[in-house]
Length: 273
Length: 259
Picture 1 (tube, each protein chain N blue to C red):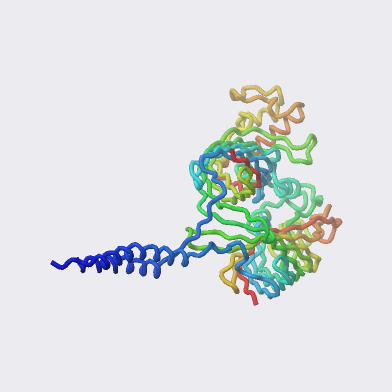
Picture 2: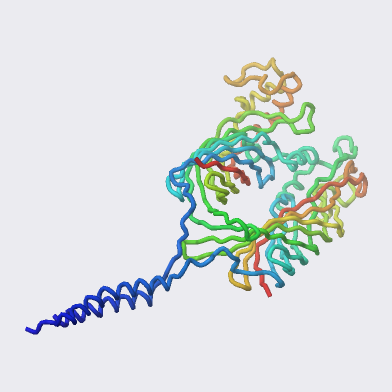
C-alpha cells in the first residue's frame, strides 16, 4: 500500500515534469469568420497575357460554393467583347502577306466552365504595418465549352473587322490565384488562368472551304452550298460577303488544328453570402 | 499488516491533488500570453541590398532575349528603396522571324520588274543592355503558412525607373543589300543605337532570413522605337522613319542579399 501511495505521488510529478520539458505550444488565432458553407459570387475583369496571334479582354462571372474552408465547387462564364487578331497578325498580313494558321488564330468569344477549387495555403498581409488582412492562395481546374470565332477582315479594311463563327469547342482550364479577404463578405481576387481549347477549323459560318470559294465567286448568287451555310452570314453588302468569304476560303484552304493556351490575368471582387 | 497513518494519508491526498495543478501552472507559464505576431520579422531600414536575377523576355514574338539583372539599392525606410539596375541580355531573332523571312514576298514584280514598296515590321529591336535609376515602393508585408509549420515572410512591391539602353536593330523584312533577289540571312538592314528607356514593374520578395531573400518580378520596359515606312524594297535606305512605343515584358527571378 505504501508502494502504491509512493507511485501515486511520483507518477503525476514525473508526468508533469515530462510535459513541461517537451511542451510545444501553438498559438492559434481564431479566425474572425469562415468561408465554409457559403457562396461566393465574383466579377472579374480579364486580359490575355500571351497575345502572339490573338488579343482578348473581357469580363467573367463565377459562382463558388465553399464546401469547406479550403475546398469549393465553382461555375463560371466569361465573355470577351475584345477578341480579335493581334497587332502582329495584322502586321503579318499587311506587310509581308502572311498569316498564321487558322487554328492558331482562333478567337475565344465566350466560355462556360464547371470545376473545383483548392485553397491549401493561408497567410496574412499588412499594409504599412496597419490593417492586417487574411489571404489565401488557391488552385482551380475546370471543364466546359468555348464559343469560338475567326477574324475574316483586318481592322484597316473597309467596314472594319469582321468575324466568322466557328462554333463550340471543348475547353479545360487551370488557374492559380490569390484571395484577399477585405472583410467577412468582400474579397479581392487576383488570378492567372489558362484556358485550353481545341482549335480544329473546318467550317466558318457553317460553310466549308468549297462553299466559301463559291460565295467569293458568286456572292449571294452562290448555289449548291452545304446545308446551314448562308452567303448572307458573311456580311450585309455584296462586297462584304465576297471579301469575307474570300478570307474564309483562304483560311479554310489549309486545314489546321491545334490546342490553344489562352493565358489570362484576372482581377476581381467577390461577395460572400 | 501496517496501516498508513491518517496524517500520511492526508498528506498523500494533498500531494496528488496539488501536483497536477502545479503542472498546469507550468504549462501555462510555458505558453505565456500569445505573442504579437503582426510586426515585421525582417527589417530593411538603413540597409543596402544587392540582387542578381535571371531575366527572360515574355512578349517578344520576333526576338529572343535572355539575360541577367544586377540591382543595387539603399533602403532609407521599410517601404522605399532607391538604386540602380544594370541589365545585360543575350539576344537573337526568334524562330518565328525565320519562318517569316522564308516566306517574304518578292522585292520586285517578277513579270514587270517594277520595284515593290512596303513598310518595315515592328518588333525587331533587341535590348542588349541597360542602366537605369530605380525606385521600389513596398507597402505590403505578409506571411504565408505552408503546411502550418513553415511560415514564409514576403513583401510585395512596385518599381519604376529610367535610364539609357543599348539596342541592336535588325530588320525583319527590309534587306540591306540592293537588288531584287532573295535577301541572304546576314544581309538584312541592321543598326545599333542608344536610347532612353523606362521601366515599371511589380514583384515579390520571399525572405529566407535576415540577409537573403528570393525575388520574382515582372518588368515592363518601354522606349522610343522607329520603323521605316514606304521603303523601296530593292533599295536600302529609302522610305521615311516613323516612331512608335516599343515595349518588352520581362520575367526576372533571382536572389538578394541585405547588408
